[in-house]
Amino acid sequence: MLDPRNTVVVLIDVQEKLAKIIPNVDSILVNTRLLVSYALGEGIPVIVTKQVKLGEIVPELRDLLEGRAHVVEKKTFSCFGSKEFVSTLEKLERKTLVIAGLETHICVLQTVYDALERGYDVVVAVDAVGSQLASDHEYGLHAIEKLGAILLPAESIVYWLLKSAEHPRFKEALEEVKKRRKALLK
Image (cartoon, rainbow, N blue to C red; front, side, top):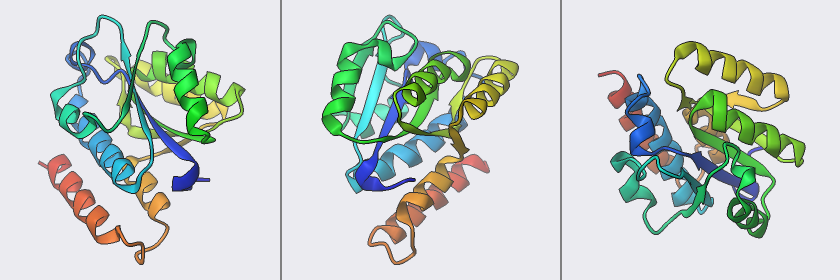
């Protein structure tokens, strides 16, 4: 299912105003950075959505994404409500979406539903999504899984895309994984 030639990463609303209210946002951002860093290095397109009025992309990701990702503004909860998002996605001609972002039970859930309805394969980076309330996050993930998306940690997604320790970027990815683990174990 996860093939770098057929995958796009969708990063939903990881913006300053929203991130401030998410209790475990630091770990979410560490996992998101691992995923996005690997994707960009591998040439996997990244689409970043910005919900109107929620501020700029968080500083922890801004430097990594600047000039390297497709940035799309939206007013709807589902990314598919944005014509610009749909147009960008269609131009990329990829059928697997790896989704990360905020909030699990609203924008992530509705985007997953619409993606599956349109025939996309969907993998949600379970440790790179979050909600303000733990129960909303939990029920959002439950609904996402029931809809048919695959839930995996960001590290699993990176290794699935690598396929083998013989991959030319394996050592580089391994260093990023080690940095992630160190940051999360603090």
